[in-house]
Structure formats: structure tokens, C-alpha cells
Image (cartoon, rainbow, N blue to C red):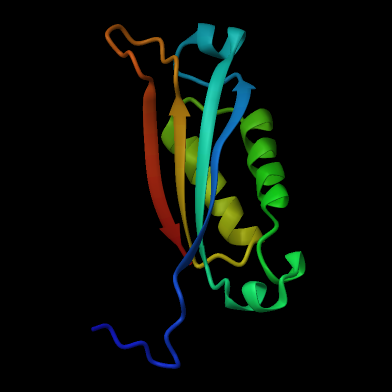
Length: 128
């Protein structure tokens, strides 16, 4: 049996799955000229108790605002690597929202690599 002390902070998770963007990133010149689809997931570790109690958006992380931050980074940044893109997204989420930790996945579903059928993906976890 797990005992929870009154000082334990919950590890609730809010997920935004499969944010999709057409952007111009990649190692190859063609990727940066033609562009391609990128998919992003973000999982924010938060304390959702207050939001659940109050039932108000102001008591939690506004997921549309998270989407807008991710969208700005993906559409306006210039990245060769998915690792860099994921890092920038994670940093921005931690700076702007009340999450103690964030997991970011960035996918390139149509990576121009011979033999890759289901794309490539980078997953990182960052915390305060």
C-alpha cells in the first residue's frame, strides 16, 4: 500500500497529442525548401487538484496557449535536428507554464530515409 503524505505533490499529467504542422526543417536542403509534416506531443506534469476543485481554466494550464507556443516554435524556428526542435519546445513550455516537468515527442512521419516506413521520432524529458 502506498502512503501519501499531506506534503506530497501530485504528479498529474496533461497531454496534448499529435499537434501537426507543415514546416521547413531538416538536414537536407530539399527538406528545408519543400517542407514536410511534423507532429508534436507534449505531456506536462502538473498539480491538477486546484483546477479539479474549482473547475476553472484559470486554475490549470491553458492547452490552447501551449499549442500556440509550440506552433510559433515549429513554424518560425529553423532546425536541422528533431532533437533541437524538441529541446526548444520543452524549454518554452517550462518557461511559460506551471509544469514541473515536460515530455516532448517530435515526429517526422515521412522522413526521407531509405527503409524507414513509419517515420522517425525524438522524445525528451526536461524538468525545472
